[in-house]
Image (tube, rainbow, N blue to C red; front, top):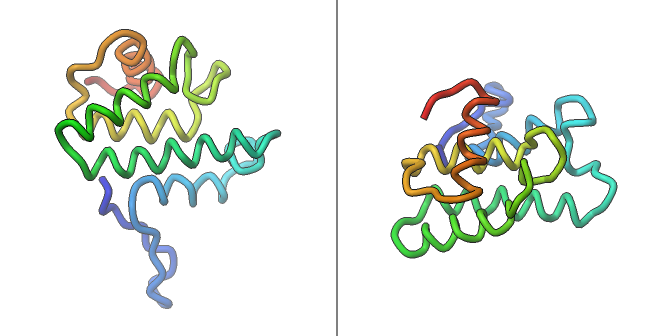
Length: 127
């Protein structure tokens, strides 16, 4: 959730707070192909960062604001298989899927519902 915390250094009291920030941190620690900040174009990295920020907001809002964010995420997905394009999920897909699941995952329609189900199968987790 938004208040998840990863203790990085218990001796120095260093922690990474928030699910999307933990995902950002882990992409930097893993193999280079998982680090979206090393993408071919800065626009790709900026788009992933914007998507991660939207996930944080999604976990903090409700009602009209939440529906507007879900609509913007659906628009960003369009007809693509995954948010960053390509044939594999990215950190953006993981973050959006998790945020939608925590928000209830219900009332998704069209391509976003298809994408959500595809991610659930890819991550081997049921609704």
